[in-house]
Length: 208
Image 1 (cartoon, rainbow, N blue to C red):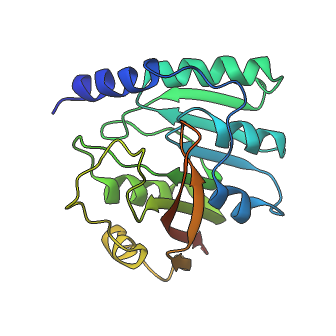
Image 2: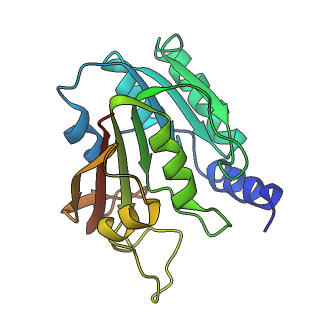
């Protein structure tokens, strides 16, 4: 499907739900980043903006992107209303044809899943190359289907973090896998219901 179709779909997903006023950050982000010295971070797929706002509150300079213009506009307004506009820059990218410029100390990709054409391995490989030496790439994928997930296909298979690392295909002389596991947690859905879910966590450091 075309980029236009994907933009229309994700604009609809965001427009159909109320704009968040103080969204929560992802749990795997806070556990990984807490204690790190703040720098420049790229957030791939801003969603409601919980990660971008939390990072800015920790002192990070955030570039956050999404394919949805609705999501990008909402997060820009939200950052401004929370007094974080100087620390949060928003950009619209489909990542299939464009990628943010710059070099980053941290790049996060949380649940970057889509039913549209997207070469995720190529996107994440490009992200790894956009890291400064010592920088971290944090990829958190679904490892199970939550009751509120937009994709309820019972036959869906979630690649393991090790399989994803192999697909990205980074040179171990330059990048090191620091974490590749599948922890479980209790998650809260948009309607307030809870369920146990599995996350697939991949953390890669650029060492040179």
